[in-house]
Image (cartoon, rainbow, N blue to C red; front, top):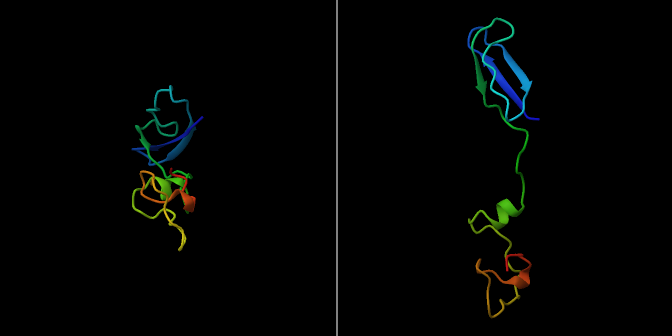
Length: 90
């Protein structure tokens, strides 16, 4: 179940609540009965380092390159790289 954060517009208290996606958002502060606004907080999920999202799908040409001396096969995959280099795109 996701955890949502709300900030009271009156007392500026921030509360965390476990809620289902189907639950209605909270509207009243439990401390002062002020109006609550849902806030977007930073997630703990980060994509760091190399991987499919950085090497295979970013489209910036930073994928694996073939080592010197390897020749490309007659038919190259859509990415234009040799499948002999192990780029896993073909």
